[in-house]
Amino acid sequence: MTPEELLQSYQDGAVRLQERVAQVPAATWQDHPIAGTWSIAEVICHLADFEVIFATRMKQVLAEDNPPLPGADENQFAARLNYSSRDVAAELQLIVLQRQQIARILSATDLEDYQRTGVHSEAGPVTLETLLEKAIAHLQHHLTFVEQKVQAILAAG
Image 1: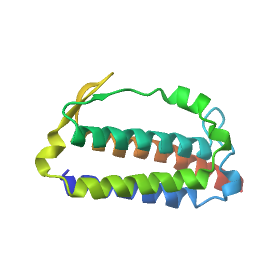
Image 2: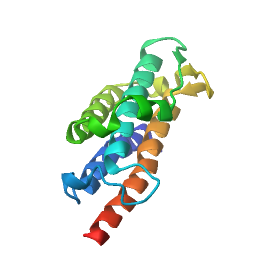
Image 3: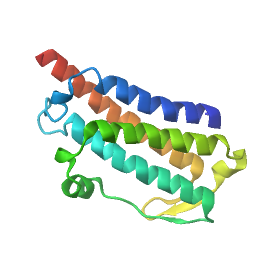
Image 4: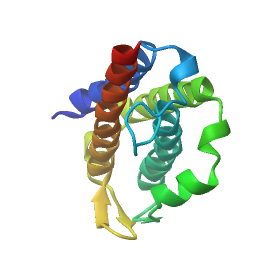
């Protein structure tokens, strides 16, 4: 994909997430329509937390020379960051705004900057382009689960 296509996909992900979540009432976001999985609210909180991490990593790679990029444990985030009591609509808006900000920054970035690197504590050297691709894939991965939950809620309707 070209940088322009990557940025479009990056921004589209947040829009698709908003559209899917809006298909069911906010009162159902805390429900667990598929046993043993996170609720829509928990998925949104997870995505909001990791959007900030992805954005920070991309900014560091742009601004610093070969910065260290620490890993993060999603299970520790979920256990300790009160996913059940957060304002899900605000978390969803944070995802949208974070992606808009990064897209604006990256749209003004030189093509060669997409090959700048940072060193992830678990994955080793990663380029800005790879970080952007991982952010896109991460949201898409979880969007599949949100879609399943929405369908289960609508079917139980």
